Every structure is written in structure tokens, then in C-alpha cells.
Length: 98
Image (cartoon, rainbow, N blue to C red; front, top):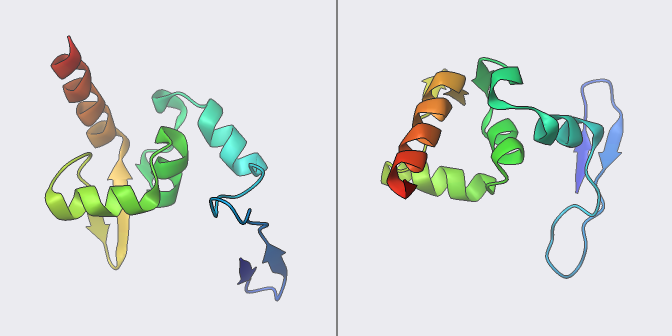
């Protein structure tokens, strides 16, 4: 996958041919995965939540359409997930298991 930044730099992400997943984690992804919920920013993008929770972005979009999972808020044309809503969703999941 190729992505051009505003500075004109091209970033290349190598994809495996078997499962179409990135072959290596970026420093950003590694950092997000190592954080606790309290260490995350107050508002998360869908990609950030996907990386942190290890839930595919498409699944989060599907859950949003079905009214399942953490409830995002719309900020202009962008979706953001409040850390508090993610925490409430996490507590709800834990209470169902217990």
C-alpha cells in the first residue's frame, strides 16, 4: 500500500500475499499496543482503537452500524472514540463474563 504525505514523501507498507496484513508493526503500533487504557489519549481514532484493542477496523465499522461495541462520536466527518466510552464498554464486557 502506498500513501503520499503532504510533504510529498511516499510511505510503503509491505503486505503479505497470504492474509493481506502488514508484516511488521510500526513504532506507533507497538507503542499503542503497550499502553493501558489510562495511558491512551482522551479521544481515539478508529485506527488507534483498532490497533490498541486488536480489533480490525472493518469490524469496528460493522459494530457501529449494528449498534454494538463502543459508541463513537462524530466530529465533522471523523469518528472518535472517547476513552470513557471505551472503558464503559470494557466494563460491560467484563460484567457479562463474570
